[in-house]
Length: 124
Image 1 (tube, rainbow, N blue to C red):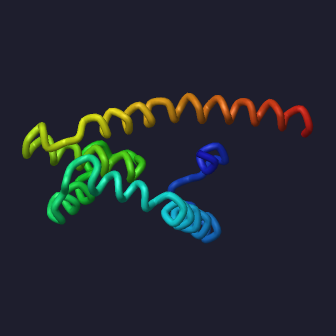
Image 2 (cartoon, one colour):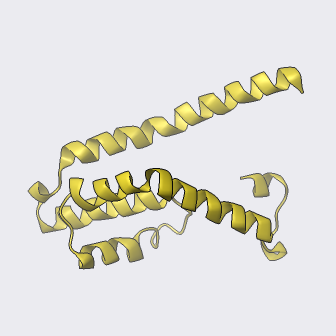
């Protein structure tokens, strides 16, 4: 979003420091909490086989052509694969908890951002 705000053009190319920062943030996120996500996605939604994981990973955001969270794409894809095999194969309680978390993330993040903006605006 920062790149859009600063009038980034597609032909400009992404600076190296931006690429390195993004890679570092993703690596840090995976090392801090990624194991919990992998454990939930790999076993608490449904028991998946390697072919299911590959299918979910390859087809995640292909049809909507938008940048999306890999966690959301893979998790919902695995739910879809599980539901296509049999509906009872998906642990819908875990899916419901994940959905509620996804829905409340945006308003909570927006509220925290607005509060941070107003507090910082008082001092700067």
